[in-house]
Length: 462
Image 1: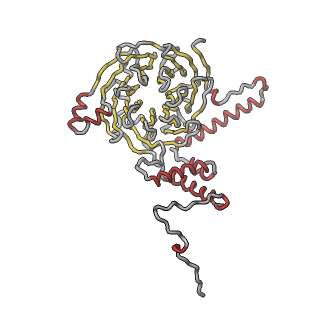
Image 2: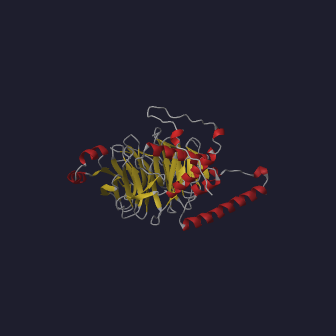
Image 3: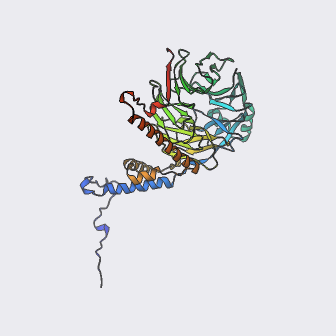
């Protein structure tokens, strides 16, 4: 039996187009495209699967790292490819991110380098547990580009750099930060001291009732506002215009780190010992405005992206988590087999990378979006990636896509601890529900999750 198929050449019905002719119009009437949503769902599912297939967040480490744990990282706010790191043995290093090699290295302190910051004029300020603050000379990017072309110039540069100034403190120091534009910096230890970079003694003492100050941070937008966290589980705000503290809250557990949102002057985040990070509005601190969950151990550091839309946290559970600004659960979690407790995390100045320091001495570089690549892309590729992102947003709540996009492999220890923590939280909630059920309505005190961790609030006028 013979079967004849109908065949015809496309030349007989496809019009010949010249380069000067306009493209054929497309009719976008939904009735003419009945399967468009089904096709787009399939494309979104494929894009989600490809995203997880190409997820490789870890890029590498900087040089050979440090000999001791890395407990401080300082960004150069005027340069994309420079950061400084300080370690537990008092050594500080200034890194070139293009080559991932150190440019300068100084033995700064006897003991731990507890605070490190890059000044607006491209110098390094470091403080340590040896009661000293030191100002170091490093070259900015202009000098580096002009004079770092040959190895001879490199040797000359290194020999010319070094210690510029030493400031002596009365107490061991645990944290420091520099003003965004003025030649002033603040240190935290047994007291909070405000320093002028041109003077040998602090110009004011801002302490208010805390035994020991663990972290201090200048507001990046409203630069006269300062925040600190103390060992008495307190968070205190200061105003340099009045040279005094303004308000203080006491939380249920200690705060390890503070970071201000670079785009919203009144918003800051805090890393707490209770496994959570909290988002605050300094205009109303009776409750936090968001809680970042998912860690199973103390959160040691928190940092905002330069866009203010993402938050990165590093934890004692040996993981790094990324959060969207207004969401409470992490969108991604980073970890490696060799990485130990993470004490410091920072976003790069272009928000594309993340730096982390842990107590085994390595400074690691991660992608902020694990599936994204930094190479040059054609216009067609860029439009394809943008189209895929919109499709994933459109179908994000579909069960299969949601399951694939949320799935992550975490270390066994973290997974087991998370399961135990989930049972504990459910038990606490069940107990609270039983108490409410058997208590008179007039005696019930309803407190939201964002208020429970706050013990009290104090204003300076009080």
